[in-house]
Image 1 (cartoon, rainbow, N blue to C red):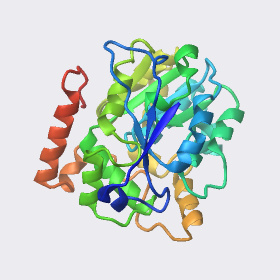
Image 2 (image 1 turned 120 degrees about the vertical axis):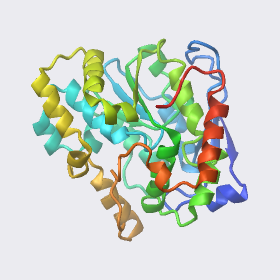
Image 3 (image 1 turned 180 degrees about the horizontal axis):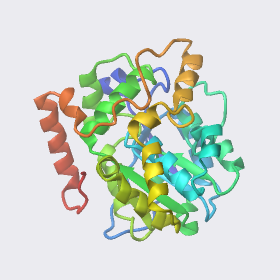
Image 4 (image 1 turned 180 degrees about the vertical axis):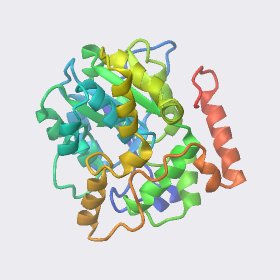
Amino acid sequence: MFTVKPLETPLAKAVEAPMHGSTVEVHLNDGSYLPTGEKPRKPTHCVLTPKFVTQAERIHHLTVYEDDVWILSFPKCGTTWTQEMVWLISHDLDYRTASEVNLLDRSVFLEFSAFVLNYPGDTIEQVEKATRPRHIQCHLPIALLPKQIWTVRPKLIYCARNPKDASVSFFHHYRHLHGYRGTMPDFLDALLTDQILFGPQIPHTLDYWHVRREMNILFLHFEEMKTNMGDVLRRVCRYFGKSYSDQQLATLENHLSFDVMKNNKSANNSCVLELVESLSGKKVENFQFMRKGKIGSHTEELSEEYIKRFEEYITKHLEGSDFRFK
């Protein structure tokens, strides 16, 4: 079902992190059941871990329900933000439950236990046993999603973000949460050569973009959520067949503002920090899961050389596609 290729280059070794260890490329052998979209394209492989390989068939054969809601993205592209927004809109703005039940329990990270070493639980089983309608967060590309998704056709929401900003945010995430102790240049070089966890970065987005109409995927952009959240909220409402007053949407927009979200313990993934600290036995210093949430923040940390390399990387991968990052 899958072909696994170990990543053994010096660079791949240099960017290994204690949270997940070594990495491998996971390739789907037969994607004939996948949607073809607007133009046929070979679905991308994914950089994951040997531990994930042991769980890949469980995910492949996972039972999918029509009322499932899947939040899909490459890491650090507004995933947490989208999860909270989508959960509230689809649950009639139930702020009380949202404050009492942590987002990680309301919107389960499917493959988390499948790549985190020494994780004490089973997030795949957690999804299997979740009360319907299930909300499921996932960073996997289309090739590694459950096969039933493409026939059952649940709700699929994808959030994209400019790769330059996402990469800088992912580096800080990797350093503080994954325990990475290498350099930023090594991390960026690995990402630009498709050797970092969950990569390749841009093909991940393009695979979803090219099947969006066929599969009725709601495609969001991090940048739109920052600059015109009101319009995004109305699009999400239409997708779920929900109607709220202008005042209700204004209240929701305030709830989802960065300053409110980063201090919301039920939705800011602070419990992930606590879990990482318990697994590693070390305090995570000077880090918030929701760090800056800015557009263009890469200009504060990337050199002109890396900005140029990212622009070349983006141009190369977008050739022939009508998709554009905001």
